[in-house]
Length: 118
Length: 107
Figure (cartoon, rainbow over the protein chains, first blue to last red):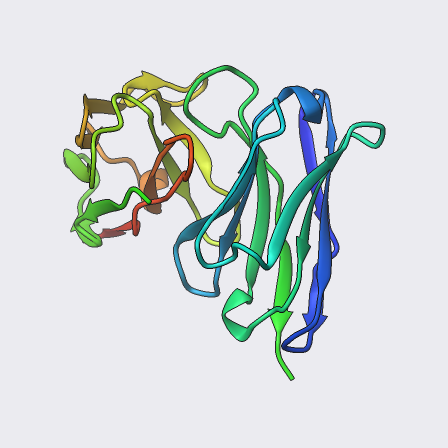
């Protein structure tokens, strides 16, 4: 059974750093497209970053040069390193994947809340 | 980055109504589009992939159509459990942006 479990969220001061983790089971992270999506309180979904099985990475303009997506094949885990955090980064962060070679994210984690505030 | 314009942003409808939500891409994306349903406090749920393919387990009253720049999600007969927010997402290589969402409320 495919499962995604995010962790690492919490309260952080502006300018600080956090690393989110997404532990996967039931499939191999390195073989799949993986994505981070966030949702600010009361807001819509915002694509943050994705990584292809081949390793290419892409970022939304709002996080480029501050966030880094990566994966650890031995831990079967996806990461999001977040630096220079701002108040507008406050959101629930979801990891998601597509287990078939099609256009749609069929598995999502439950999300982890990041709050950036002094 | 490709922008997705979703409309309407909200609508009120009754059980049994036919509902259509549209999503327009700022440039052509072929069929690289998905539709999701989200309920409060839950992650999104995939309804339609590849613009018009129904995800396994999703009721057949949901359907997707379109290609290129214009897409639509249709619910043929709205059920009580369908009151939620719906999002489209495009899968260009470099960005996978979402539409702004459509909140479907009970009339």
